[in-house]
Length: 424
Image (cartoon, rainbow, N blue to C red; front, side, top):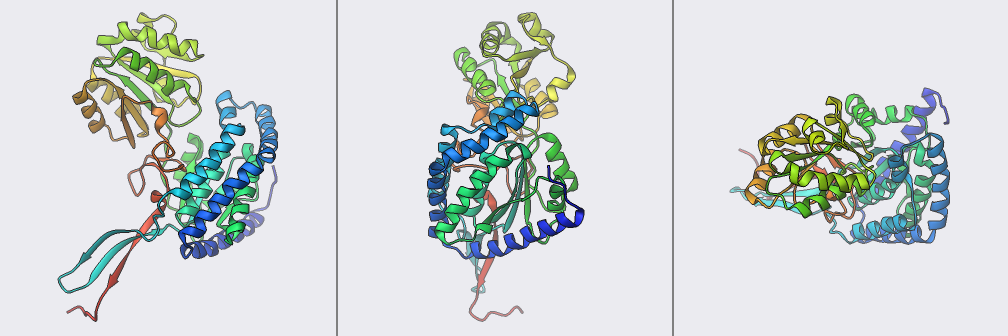
């Protein structure tokens, strides 16, 4: 890891910030056609340079294994042909989205004749701090570009080579469209002090988006002087209600936990009503255990299925990001809601039931960013929501909630048109 003096870091980051602010001014005046052509050219570059990206990723995977990253984190880090193609398609999908910049979201004419419009505008410069997922480089860069924002990316050291190979493709797209490469920049050092500097760059950065583990998010929320999109841990719950269809419950729980265990939409805690636990739980746990999942249960779960290991109090508040699931039997929907309200992180919760009234109660009572009925929590993803991609799931209550896509990367201003009015 390269080390720099504090003065070096200040100089490096100020230069990045100044360039980003200049690029943001250019982007704010750029047409949709120009931005979209850059994204489409970048998608072509990703496909054309897939061998280079995979070669860079091999280096990162080797470092990850040396660091003894968990299998889930290695899975997040790995790039293959399918994932590179998914990145390319994601860029094309973002290009196909309606450009939010300039959209009129409210208009009115006052009694005095003043015409007032509320119009979407770019945020300006977005700083994204993320860890081991190199695909965030493509997703974040593309979403910011579409919304007319310059961005400064600070990826994890584990994905350093992969992220820079992807960045080279994004730059190729920008050059093809005649836009400055500084529209999308990466922090050019792995020195951790650069993160601290980013969090104080109020003159250059308009918003910070943290995307990573709890320690990263905690640091950003604690130390940032720049406004942030709050993203707490993905402590997601799936609740099997008395009215659940047994087959549907088995499929949903297995997918919600085991499709990809290292993503923030992976279910970490299973809740099941006592009235159906003896009937449904053994089949659900059988599927999970056969798929390689370790189940940690409360006394009621272990009384039904002795394969579950004892759960501790800490399990209910742990985001495993691994093949581990905590399970608890609850008396009714009110107990399930109370458990989630106490232990949850306001990310994503799902109820499995054929009782529509129970589903509406569950979704109405919980204030998580995403609440679901009869669906896997793994759908907590901007791409699945039709946003093309996302740069995170915001769990705060100001500006953006849920998947942060193109629309959430804009703010607004008012345009007021008069005919000579003066205020009495």
